[in-house]
Length: 206
Image (cartoon, rainbow, N blue to C red):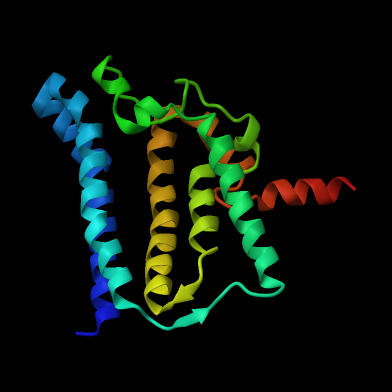
């Protein structure tokens, strides 16, 4: 089997595992059956996600493909823009998320089981959330595609980009369940990953 097909299948398998472990059906079943021990699940989930991703990254780098595209000349400006915007979206997004809850430490101290990783239990549509609904996913997309491209990187980027889109849609189902009509109105006003609606509103005002 072609090495790049193996890489693609391994990456898809990682995405499927990651998605299944955090799905509503799995988390609700675990909450029901393990009781208070569920507070350790986010830590376990993050540990499995990181450890299972390492072999894929190692395998990708072992392929040593010839470059298909490198950021040279005027393209370097675009690369720097992608990286800068990615860092900005990540940092501004970090202000809106509860890092302890994201990594699983907050759950050890309380029994709250809300789906959102936001810093507050209320729907926050201020700041960077006025541009996009998922700033960290936007940051990851920008940083993924700011790298030099070979076949292996193109495979990884394509699978992860598709997964980020699918993951955003799945996460939105949970957020609609959590926030109801308020989140549905938010979806209509703000773009999911790329700030098209925000840009359109700025252009039409002129």
